[in-house]
Image (cartoon, rainbow, N blue to C red; front, top):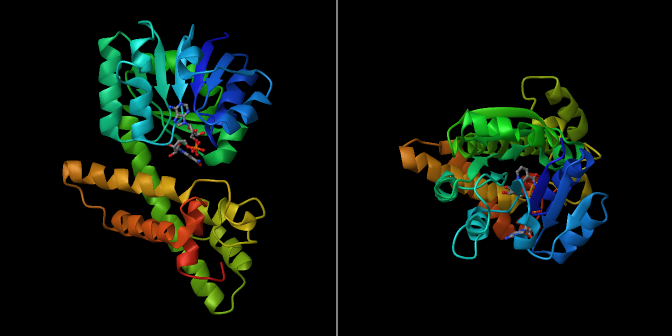
Length: 298
Ligand code: NAD
């Protein structure tokens, strides 16, 4: 069944996600503040670009947002000029951005007060997963709302996990990304140690990928240049998942830990490493560039 979908935020992730919705036969009206992102999405069949966010949501049954951080999501939906003020009751809002659980609750409560259902549905799978339509959706919200959203999510992803009530999706996503941030940093450290002993980082990675040190960082997004042809490390750490986005997520994990008195010693250490990587001028590069803090040879 074709659904009228408004898609807001056509960046590294949102662009290919909107395209997959159009490919699945949905009518997609999209908008991004960046003219460049709009122009890129407009080249794809099926995605029509609206002049404003308000125009994009006109007549939409489902509104999906994929924005950088909490402040962008709150600014889009809340306030007198926000989208919630103009969406009719019964609209389904799905926010796929990775943001603070507290921000989700703020927007979801405002939506609920207007009869608008909202899910937090952050994703995992990176830009490659977004392009291939194989993302994992990590969902918070009511089960029946998820059932309404399921056909739309299935056009963009392969796995859907219902983690609990509103904001549970974000909490779970932060847990995943905290583990990822730590694993990426220590994988870089291991490869740098091997290289300092004269080992070939490619052979070391191949060994680790079938041994107990294996991970997404060894097999898919290896931080050492030349080990994997399609990894950001092999194209100057461009594209992929930005260092600044990982730094944001580790900051959100720290906030989430403090809010319940949990301790995250390795997560905090990793947050400092990605902050140092930003200070070294690599905030806009893929987060695997954190290895350069340890080895200039990377
Ligand atoms: P991005 O910076 O490439 O894209 C975000 C887009 O949102 C930009 O094009 C920006 O212009 C647009 N935008 C900002 N405010 C807007 C508004 N009010 N209306 C319309 N457009 C607006 O970021 P991304 O890599 O696509 O990531 C998006 C979200 O997904 C982030 O929260 C990130 O943490 C999360 N995420 C990213 C990845 C990844 O691999 N890149 C993976 C999983 C999750």
